[in-house]
Image 1 (tube, rainbow, N blue to C red):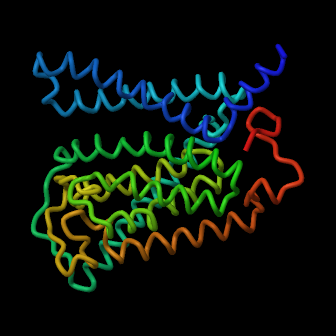
Image 2 (tube, rainbow, N blue to C red):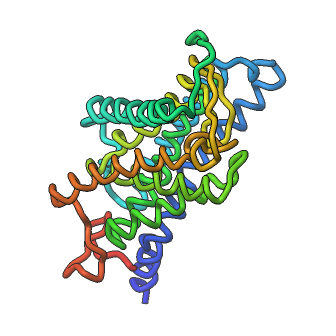
Length: 301
């Protein structure tokens, strides 16, 4: 009986749902705590009005979430988190930056070619600080959605089901953003939710997906001065996107445009083709003869 209780506890602890909940808390709690502390110091002193202080706050929160994640993985999954291993960071993050910038620039080029985007003026690089701070949220979202939710789902339900479910969740997460609509949520699920999960699957590390996410956001807000998921930005390019909402994205921004969806779905197809060719697809647990969890044992599913 004494052994049955610990075994039952371990099965509950390592159940995929339990792990997703614990992992989400482990990375969200440090972010909330650090931001509350810095806000409590910054607001009375007036420092919170400075862009550099906001960047410091976001950077500290990112460091805190990664520390929280490492602690969670070590205590609950009994392993080292290879998904955030420094190995491959520079190359994979760099490729992600390049692809993210390329995809959004391609979207804007298509809008311009079809007469839906006009450039009015140019600003200095200094105006992009706010967009830089907002773009750092990509680190948090990737660690949460791909590092915790998608990774654990994929281990249990397989790649294809996890890909769809995590994409739907990603779209729903942005429904609370300013000017969000059902169409914007669906667009984000299709273009970003699928693309970023595919990017993670290709390497099973977070750096490629995180670089892609960061560069997409910064190119969107910092370079083109367009809203990032409904949040208004000032960028180096001062212009306007016109046309019906399904083309321009409306008040939410270009992310809700069918052109952005088409560009990102094309990129997703290319990445997933590589995933399939390299044999990186994980079958759902009911199709496998044995299912090994993060701790090296068959988990409760």
